[in-house]
Length: 148
Image 1 (spheres, rainbow, N blue to C red):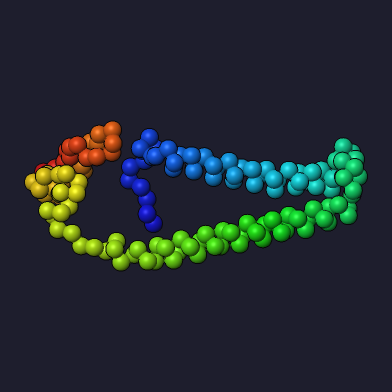
Image 2: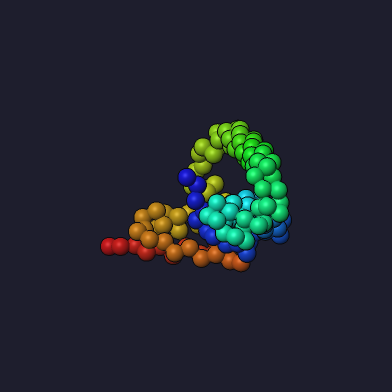
């Protein structure tokens, strides 16, 4: 499982934040769309007078069957879209998997993270490491805690 080491939402781009907000809103709208009729149906089945009148107003049992067909079609479309998304992500991640196994040496590793070679060696021997970052999320300093 891939877990993020650094959780810094302030470093996300505006596009990622807007996309996450849009997905969040869509998910809540779908939940509300699916749960409100279930609450109404539960009230009708339990014999709530207000709900019984509402069900009669909207056509009663026959209207309920028509709505159930719409809900089933909506759920099937949502499941199909979800399965397409899962398939797309699986195929996409399968294509990039060999690149994740690239072997790098210490010099390349230090150059990428802008760390000195002696700091890297000290951190490898340390029991605990404190990593300091700047505002952009780049490593500024490593502070190894070496037990004796």
